[in-house]
Image 1 (spheres, rainbow, N blue to C red):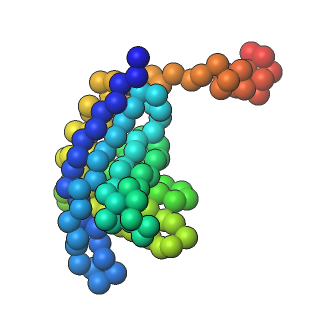
Image 2 (tube, one colour):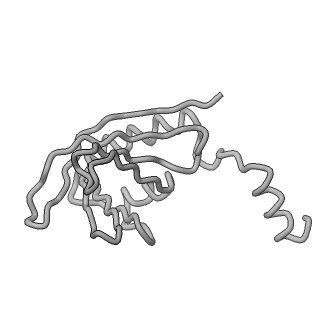
Length: 137
């Protein structure tokens, strides 16, 4: 059985003029994709007028709340004493969204009640691939 956790939360999108635009982002975690978190943005904020979902590693979110982390399209870092900045990089540009760090911690704690960190199941395909890399050990 699949379990999905959703937590709407207020956030601030930093504009190019360093102003903050209030936005509600839905934080989502599902046991079907236990290594990932999903940040769902409303349609009005996207360039094409469609709801937008960014998916990235749950471990990246956790790491980035304490120290800058990320490679590629998503970077997470502390932003002042109480906020966490999540940078989303796309060909169209970079969006920086500020979240209350306590809210992100609460979301992660709730996700850990579904799947503990390090307790994510690896499918048979990954187990077989790892075994072949290790020489059948």
